[in-house]
Image (cartoon, rainbow, N blue to C red; front, top):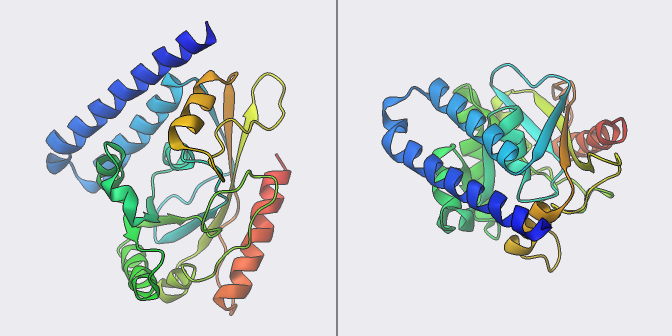
Amino acid sequence: MRSVKALLKFLRGLWHVLVGMWTIYARFPQLTPEQREMRVQAWALQFLALWGIHLRVQGHPVPNGPALIVANHISWLDILVIHAARHCRFVSKSDIRDWPLVGMLATGAGTLYIERTSRKDALRMVKDMADAMRNGDVVAVFPEGTTSDGRELLPFYGNLIQAAILAEAPVQPMSLKFIDAQTGEPSFAPCYIGDDTLIGSMWRTLKARRIEAVVHFGEPQAVMGRGRRVWAQDLREEVIRLRDSL
């Protein structure tokens, strides 16, 4: 019975993805940037509801840009959860652009793509992020550079945080946690690490008991004379504090 329910949720989610693609193709050209952001946030909230994932938000996201959001990274689901809490432009690895269905949705949501193995491209991305923030955008990054299970955060890389220094923009730390809504204990069903496959992680998430995605926004920080590496370490400690305070 659980597998049947999971399959039905998967099919509802797939239909929602197709509707989202149609919206990007047919409607986005006529919408203002603000209207697009509202559509993306509403679409993400609806997707979570279709998959039975409840969103709980603590703290307050920055009301507008320029700003950089930094968060821990657990799952492919993180981007949808954060979009549902506060629309922002994500920085993602370039191969996501070519993923079926997902690539078009990510591009339509304003994703900035980076070739992670290229130092030259990282320098370009820092400039593009700074330009986006100067234009009033809220940009989001996962400074760990990859996913973890959420119990132990990996070190935060400071390279992309340099963009906030260049743009003279504040950085808002944000923690993300998935919990079992029935027991209140951490849920590792959405994890996407190690040998996990995307389909396997999705199926595990669909079959799990009701999941609650908890987003905790901290207070925005100014650089206050710190270099990018020191600031990255301070932000990591704050994300850990936010996660553990839930």
